[in-house]
Length: 207
Image: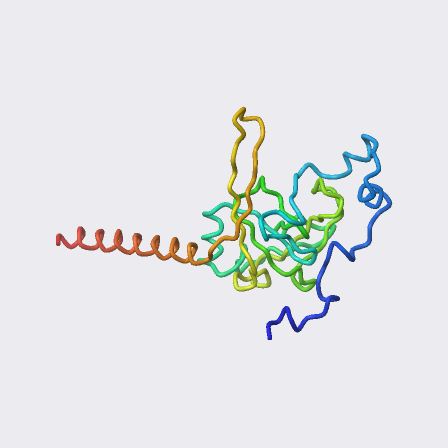
């Protein structure tokens, strides 16, 4: 049985159980917000719920959007911004840590979406103010050796963007990403780097 399966609901953050402010409740009910109220929510457009065919975000999962090079870096290093020095977020003291969203994701930051269980031992909740969605919350994981390791990534989505004919609108298709493609890409890069090093050695030896 997996560690996630053995954990209780109390071990995870969830957008369904987090306390809501009166303003959040008003937005969730669909009531019209004043200008001053609306700007208290962030500018990051987020996707949540059913985001693709047979694909839905989960209320107790954290999501991080990255580009392909960053995804490959995480795979090679075995974790999400892992480092010996650490990068731990301390509320009220710094802006360290690694940015995620709870219950949804922001497409503007990359076409590859990582999903991990939002364990309270790994994450810290931040006040509302980043996401345009009143429920999807900004959340940070610890960097360094206590951060999220790659084996804790449960799913990866890939975004495919299509522009409308007039170029004004963008359609985003969300699909499951095959991790085998990531492994192959990293393996091919390593093989190519090895060939270059071998060529340099032969050149230096005059072979």
